[in-house]
Image (cartoon, rainbow, N blue to C red; front, top):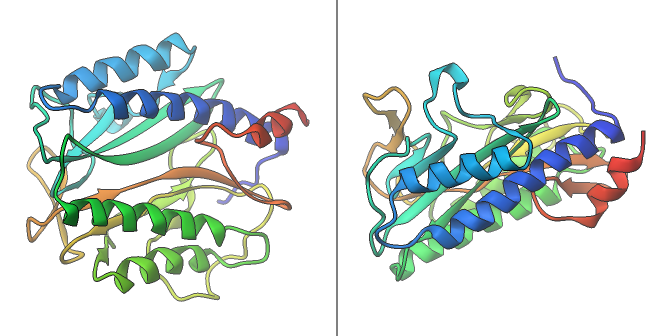
Length: 259
């Protein structure tokens, strides 16, 4: 069932989202050679709890950490460990925070030190595909207009989009209806209405779209071993246009005050 959120609820999701944005900003700066993903996870949990929120991921279906950290060919859901970042890696960092019962969810993929130009291009295209998808998240458009924007931009640059995992609705739970694929036929899917809150999350592979889940039951990797990039924002659809709730945005302050 799809739930449309009030402006007050959107404001609450935005408060959780700004915590996520702040944590991801700090983790981006921390992601240098020699740091472990467990270091990043500990920092994230500390910052989330210090802000009065709860790490949404921790304990979710048994997930053991507060963030997901995915290296290179790992697409999503990598588990933080003692593994150290090294020069030339790319690292996906996915973070969620729950504040007063409402969830913010976002992800970035960052270069570690000096990175090959081909990887930087992958990151740029994946991030731009998210921006283009958000632009389509407008009242009166259809859900797969959003999905197609990701697919069209990624495929135009010779990449593929993951089909086995997708974005989703967000609210009082991390995963709500509807599912938001990264591919689809424009002009189809549910009509977008004010109050719909979505996590849009392109997962763009440099090779085939095919993926596998590792033996740990969580880590998703590209089947061909080629690199992947993941970006995500939680956004609200409003009469005024899409509002990014996982970025520092003064519009959220206005929404937060409206009941």
